[in-house]
Image 1: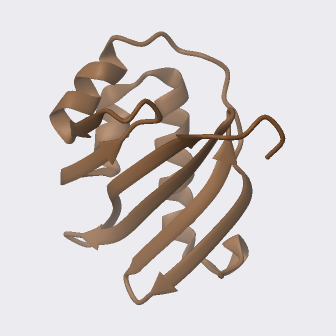
Image 2 (image 1 turned 60 degrees about the horizontal axis):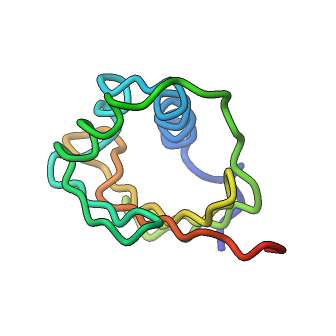
Length: 116
């Protein structure tokens, strides 16, 4: 696993900006860090494409930012898999460079046990 501090600074910035956009319910900003062929599986098991997730995000209200905890990263060149705990969920993200910039290509969220 890779320590966050050794991830490329531009990836760290992209992760933070995407998280901030998520909590702000800013679909435009969130979309800048989300690949066109992005897919996700939500904690309720719902599968969504990028367009579906943007529509879902647009229907949400902003809420307070929750920082990532217990992050773990595995980097293989320009592909990074990260797992973290946030807001009662375990989240797995896959990031890669798309046209020279970091973007998520897939995520999956799982509701954490009551004592994670």
